[in-house]
Image (cartoon, rainbow, N blue to C red; front, top):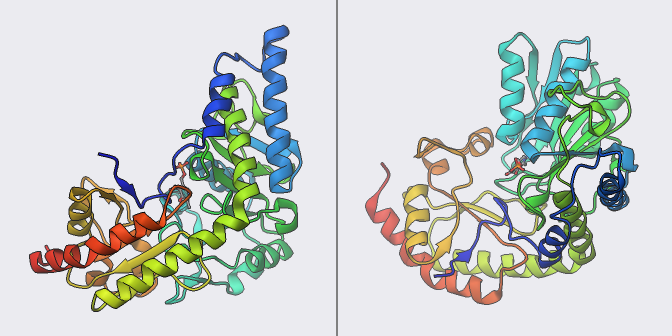
Length: 375
Ligand code: PLP
């Protein structure tokens, strides 16, 4: 059974152009080889790097291929901190675990961490800590749970004025909103190919020449010495192809998804009592993050699954136990309501028929989950 897929923020299907590009380059070898085959691989890698740089507003040398968005975030946050002589760090309480855990690890070894506050709308509130020099300031561009767009321009501007390097986790944004790395002015920016129809296991770190993060991996010195390891040439080429198509379709897709999301939200609000909507107005068009008080998030996704719908609660689960999302808690949502959360994320393959099918089933599913009660 083909499920109706409402989890595009977790990963989105690979684009056909990315699959074809990957297959066409699957036999390319080591781009560091000093022979004709190596030079051919190098040329494919160079072209992919140039394409990505052009699409994201940076120089090719600033594009670092990594193994995931998680790795790009780790390299930026921990690497920039290690490259600095300062011991303070500014972050937000709504970061993805790739950043959150990196920041917490630094905190546990003595770094002084200041977390910016976040409003009820899920938007971070810049404060005066950004005006003092720090080893690094980090803020995501859009939240992976709520889709809320964050004030990254102001954060970059203020931190940069204080001489602080800034990392932006743009994993949910690249391929969905226009990104111009130079215009933004951040020091580093993370992206992940599988969020825009590229292959899984391929991340990108855009990194200014200076200050550069201290590498986490030691080895052959590939990728400006920032990320040692033989680069996956086929995935790099597929990533560039996916990004090119995503950027070309971006505006039309934003409008299409905004219309579908409106239909979905209107339908939910009119058919189901007591719905909390966590996604604010200024958000990624594909995101709808909600709570249905009285229903356990896990029950909702299991019931949806049994009826052919793939969705998530939005928060990471540890050992299969659903915890209230740190993002919702930071926004001031009550724990009980946070545990009643459901994240529906629309994407490229979502159709109006998918939305209508979900709207036909969801009211009963919420009733059943509410009848089962909270654990
Ligand atoms: N940052 C954000 C905001 C994300 O949404 C994700 C993935 O969900 C990541 C980082 C990690 O990316 P990857 O899955 O490529 O490791």
